[in-house]
Length: 457
Image (tube, rainbow, N blue to C red; front, side, top):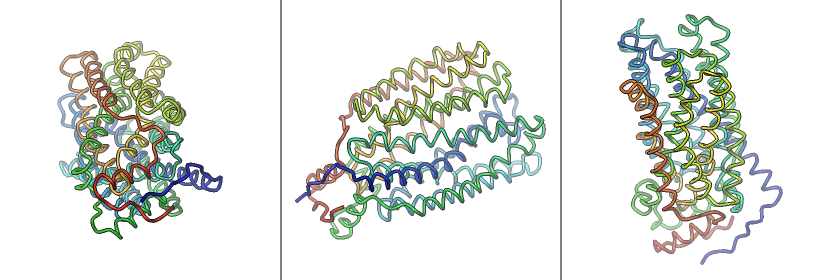
């Protein structure tokens, strides 16, 4: 027996939802400030600091990006572990653990001596810390977006759950801003020697603020229902093995959605720096400034796209992002070749706007693919596993293509193929705009012979 539930949200609950959104965003800003700080530092500093014996500058950058990829390899493991914990114990406590882990790892990165001081121990320790950082971030995303999605009303889930996504460019914005300030204040030699460390040390303060805010959020009623069901009915299973067994199509669908979005983003925010710096010897401060402007616009656009997904549906908005994303590199690189700072900013900004068409709706779409008892595991697995073959490899593949062919065209083709794969995945999905998460749980219970939740929100 299932219960009739109203979609009307009282003003008091809406106020509580805003508090949940704020807490989720602050924590996500912290996590991604630190994660993207590494991406920018890998492009600008780490190739020389940790891998100085490389034959060419691009070889050093590729080596730095390989350590960058370690974080992506660790993310699915974090998603599996924290997804299991989050589905069993709750989203809130899991998020408190992840924010501390990534903060400690990032702070210690700023303390590492370079290759010239301790030899190969330097890149080895960097890899270990990068793994821990990625492991924590692997559990972060699913919990942050689900905390909001599970509190959101059905008719506006796309809008509300897009706000944690908007926190990602804020984190990247802060990382870029700190590095930009240090590169302006310090001579190049001092910036490469110790200035970059300050950005990593600043993370400690941000972590304390984020952790404090996350202690003041509550679990969603629908999660409490699902947990009570699991505790009351021993036939009910949850977690990674269960979601792989019962919802493999949902996992592969999430992976297909993630593929092009993840590749496009890291081509824009990481490989763009490599291309302009190595091909055109473009000024570092100018590159960071271009990203700074683009991140601000990206932050503004994401919630509006989330609103569009509520109005017009998840599929058409996402498909538009995949199609437009396929075209971006073909006109963006000629824009980069002009070396005009305004045209470069425009190219990066347009790319991030195309990216937002895919990125904003992800939390709502993926949350609507899985029942509550295994939702954390399902979205984390689909989202994070894809990062290994998508975002982690994108800067490496693009840099290698540039090195081997001496042209941006193979990179543009690479991005277009990725977008075609995601477009196909979108077409095969069922439209879920406005669906009730309670109805998804009830359908899951009927399908697998379980008792439905007997605890009212």
